[in-house]
Structures are given as C-alpha cells and as structure tokens.
Image (cartoon, rainbow, N blue to C red):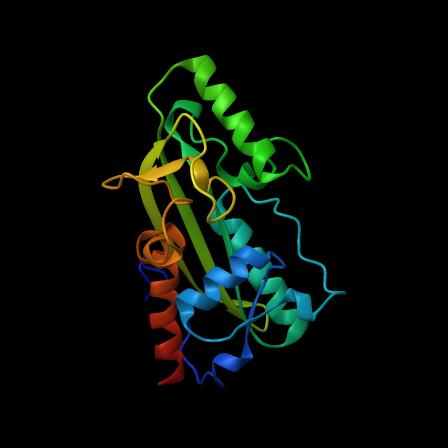
Length: 209
C-alpha cells in the first residue's frame, strides 16, 4: 500500500531498466534520474508516441491517464507525474494549470510574471505549496499513486538560476533560499517530487520481491 492508502498490485518486476518516464521534459527527467538513482528512459526514445492531454481536474487524474496510456503503448512499467504550485491567495491556482498558467506554450518566465503580478494586485500573504502526484502503471493498469508536498511562500522577485518552473519564486518553509538558489542536492532532499519518488522507490522494491 502506498502513502495515500492506495493498493498497488504485487508481481514480479523485470527490473528498473524496463521503467519508462512518461515525459519529454528534460528537467523533470533529470530530477527523476537523480532521485531514483538509476538510469530511466523517457519519451524522447519514442518520438511518435503521443502523451495524453491533461484534461483531469486533479494532479492524480492527470498522472494516472499518462502512466496508463504510456504503459499500454510501450508494454512496460511506466511512471508519470503531475505537479504544480498551489497559492492560497489565488484559491489554489495555478494548480493543475501551472505549466500553462500564462497560456498554452507559455514560458517559465511568462508564468512567473503572471503569478507575481496577480499577487501584487491582491496584496495578500503569499503562502503556497508545491504538490506532486506520481502514478505507476503496467499494461494500462494502475499499480499505485504516490504523493508529496512541500509548504512555503512566494517571494517578491525571482532569485537563483537552478531548477525550473516556479523554483525562483518559491521559498520552502524553514529555509532562506528559493528552490532555484539551492544546490540540486539540497532541493532533492526536501522537494515535493523527492517525497513522492521516495514512496515510488519503495513500491518498486516491493514489486521486485
């Protein structure tokens, strides 16, 4: 059972080399590799495979449909995540729309500028959290979901050059640095994705036993 109380199916896993990450996002793939501590293929190896549109209303729904679709298409274990930033003053936005908050094909800079502009206009406390949900599937069937979150606040101006997305404006509670100011080794110990991947890693070990 995973950290959310979901059951995941028992069975023999043929090894981590058969695991594929349902993304073409190079930043995300690098974080997964560093956190899982083994090499993992992503969809750059399958240029013709279409990733399903994120039409779900939750991070979990989006992660599940991507993992299930890809695992069936490539006949391998597949993992997919959906993650984003939830800002309390904005009613949880940008949430599942984090990657396209400023519009389809928006850049990270566009999204950050829109976020900061809306917060300045509201003049409210910038409490926020990063949330990540990972789904694991095989042959189109869900094996489990794994969630991680980290609370913090939005800073007035972007700081730091590491990371991606909203990392330059997110400062986790208990730290004076934004995610983008932290060395990757520190971020990868405390981030929302790190927490979700830690739970995923335990599930993968259990599948191999």
